[in-house]
Image 1 (cartoon, helix red, strand yellow):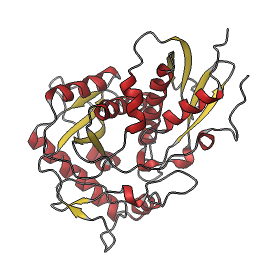
Image 2: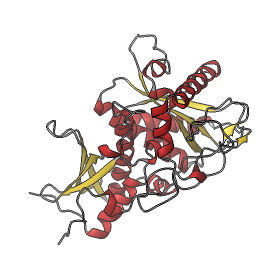
Image 3: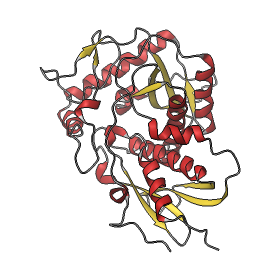
Image 4: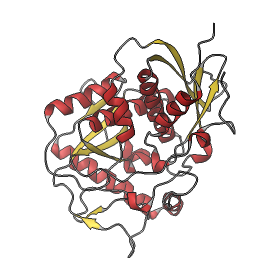
Length: 332
């Protein structure tokens, strides 16, 4: 028997919540479609919003969709329903990345702090203070990743320096690559009707010591480049990884990333994502050291955490723009 679908106001809220997720370059590479027969929301890849040069495999696109998927799960639970999720449900439709069916009454707490946090979460590319994160908070962040099948590792200080050097190397390679630098620049745009891209006010600043590699979306040093500011001397860096590296693992990593970011937001902790080294296969392989049992871990994101100002908002597509069809379905 088909599961009942929500009314239009709730449906719009669900899609708005999902679309509040972070995505690489704020490309928001997702589209939603309602399957009224099965009562499920489908999340499909918006391939035209992919980064052909920086993300040729689509790994970052899948992670972005995974973040949106986690937000959708939180919102469904907030409305008292159990989110029944399937990843890559139809092999003959590779663009269909996940479905979320609204099941019966939610079995557990809806974690209201996560639902509230998803509306407040913003990336902050600004300097953080040198105030350390409490061990209890770091433990919650690690548990958040573990809940979604990922590992959030805290490298030792010497390993942090190595990770930052790898990120700088990735940044420099991108700046020197005409195709990638042009692709990066295309996504810095004044807010417009599309709701896509990163407004110049949200780009942030560069560390005047060139220690923390904040991405320079302009991709070239010139008089209009990012302003230089003092960043924290010893940044708190975490690496999110998964034991495997398939499409489903990328979607799980995205869900883990968003859970980590929402828990951080609930604790007043800011975050920015250092993705530069992940865009170059040889650098990505060096981001995670092999554990003692020789099972290889696959880095999925480098996260900078700390206390500091909230970053400015980035625009979002409207709900109607996020639908695969031209209009929202009419539900009776």
